[in-house]
Image (cartoon, rainbow, N blue to C red; front, side, top):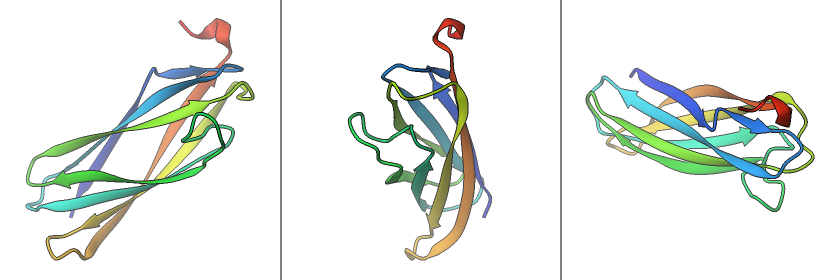
Length: 123
């Protein structure tokens, strides 16, 4: 079953040494008939977090239901604190795809790179 995952960040870059957040937008699609239920486990490199006020590096979320030639978008919010240095951080995602019988029919790995730049370089 071919599952395709595309990702982008809004804003594209996060600012170093500042508290803030950005959204990782995932687009999951399939060309097979379905429906398929998609869940994801998200692991992010510290000092980025899934919570604004504490360090949470792993999260789980339902992505949605995809079927023949359809796709679903999912937003995942990522938070930064003042201890974030300019670097490229990675978020690793494991998608579990369940078929109509609620059996895991596929597992897809995806990596998102989150670029953190010095404040003066963000336009």
